[in-house]
Length: 233
Image 1 (tube, rainbow, N blue to C red):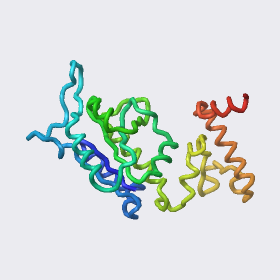
Image 2 (cartoon, rainbow, N blue to C red):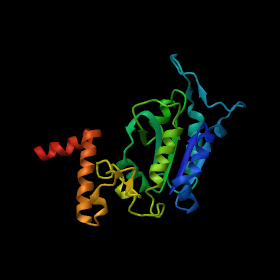
Image 3 (cartoon, helix red, strand yellow):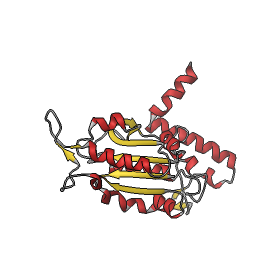
Image 4 (cartoon, helix red, strand yellow):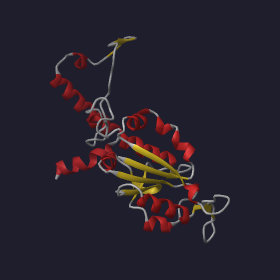
């Protein structure tokens, strides 16, 4: 997979994306991640990529010219782009299902917004998907872009050492994950649940299923609401 990340602040994303799972995916040749500095595409001597909003108001807005120039250049290089994703607080909530879907694409472009946002003409003309990582506002789209890259990279076949690991993560089937334990079984008189050391895999699976439902009902009842409604119909 190839991901082109377009940002006005490339230094924020370079280091983190060279480590851990995204870094491993690149070393293995499973992820081709390219970071593009939006200021490279600015045309004035100060490399200005933002300006004041028409109509007044606080904040600055990313200008359309450098964004169009960058993405049009990307469209002309390499294979076809499947999705151009804009990271924004008013986008669709990014979920595990969305990560699964995007991980099946061949090439993505991620546009990290900054300041007050981007000129609406960019969103109307270039962007195919818009995602938010939660109901809060960050200084820019760089952190959300890194979240998307990490969530997608770990799903690429061959990236994780255990190929089944990503398939058993929280949210893959709409439930949170069960508690996990490791050695020692007795730590300061706190014992691992007996079922996990029993060797009875049927009981272990049943316990994990029960714990996942219990935790989800306790912490994220909204995830169960749709399923419970269907069962009651």
